[in-house]
Length: 226
Ligand code: ATP
Image 1 (tube, rainbow, N blue to C red):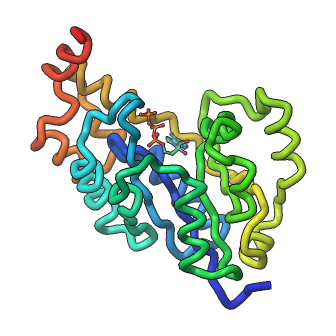
Image 2: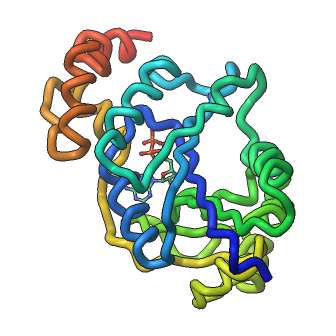
């Protein structure tokens, strides 16, 4: 039992760019579960994978702008400071070492990420390091394609948020979060098509995207030509 240590939650993503589909469900989850703080962890995308359109520095800047007036969120740039790919399990192992065995830790993912969790590096080790908190996302089934993943999920599910605070790791909690139909892909596509996406992300992030000429119309044409 570790009631004296408050549950520490992390939320990883490419954030290319960060948007309301990240911020709103996670804020609702924080309210539901009683999280005091959520740490955003921008990914280091390995060179053999499709690269984000924004640079790491731009993705960080957009996260900073998005959370500037939101005390719930903080930023941790550790994955970007590594030369190696961002394996979530390794970041969590590092945090576990820093924070000690008794610290309740949680990693937040969207429903779409849960469906492909069995493809993550050492996915079955995740629950020895943290709890998993899952936000709803529209358009994704609730049943796993992988029977092994479904079985793993079923055997670790809890509906009791108190368990997340009382134990350091080991539970999966499906949060009842609002369905927000926004993706970074849609935002980039809208920008490439010359359409506005101001309703999909914080105004300060939108203004930054304009200032930097990110995801621009011309850039879109270049990408299509490649
Ligand atoms: P892209 O469209 O480029 O794939 P994305 O919008 O899915 O990006 P990511 O940065 O890849 O955003 O996602 C980070 C995390 O946020 C993932 O766990 C993902 O499941 C979750 N997430 C993203 N958008 C939503 C949303 N609209 N609702 C719930 N969860 C989301």
